[in-house]
Amino acid sequence: MYLDRKYSYRRTLPHILKDNRPVFVTFGTFKRWELPSEARQLIFECCLREDSETIDLHALVVMPTHAHLLFTPLRNAGGWLVSLPQVMRLIKGRSAHFINRLLKRHGPVWQEESFDHVLRSNESLSEKLNYICQNPVRAKLVSEEKDYPWLWRGKIPIL
Image 1: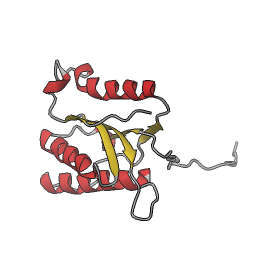
Image 2 (image 1 turned 90 degrees about the horizontal axis):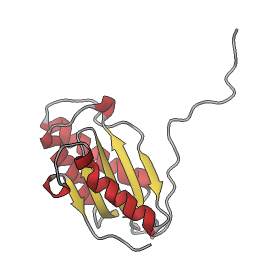
Image 3 (image 1 turned 60 degrees about the vertical axis):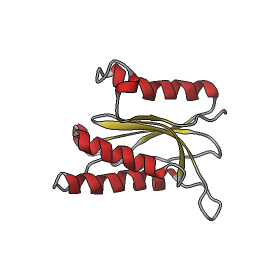
Image 4 (image 1 turned 180 degrees about the vertical axis):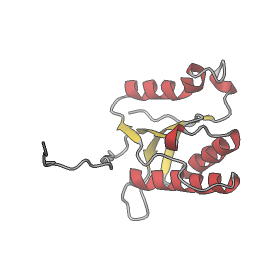
């Protein structure tokens, strides 16, 4: 039996930002590719590069197959919030270029979509911060968060 589709699936999810509200973002590698340590360092540096440029970065961890960021978007020269797709394009695009060049490969590094969540309270902010910082410990990569080289904490806003 043939059924007409009444809607089409939309891959690109909406990314909504709120003024002065931190955003928790997770993005993963293409086909759960495990990144070598040199690649994790490049991603780490690409994320830190955006701090004070397009985002106010609060926390960051780069895991073998994904990354978590907690940041508040900044305003561009025109006074508009820098969009989440723009921030992610800068981080994912730049890091993919550098990783492919470093490893002498080509092709996608990242999944197209990322997960994002605007935080509404100090409680959710501390939960996400703890989640990010404990990620390498939970994954048994290190016994203490301070021992993980691709974990960074910045200043934490009060909501």
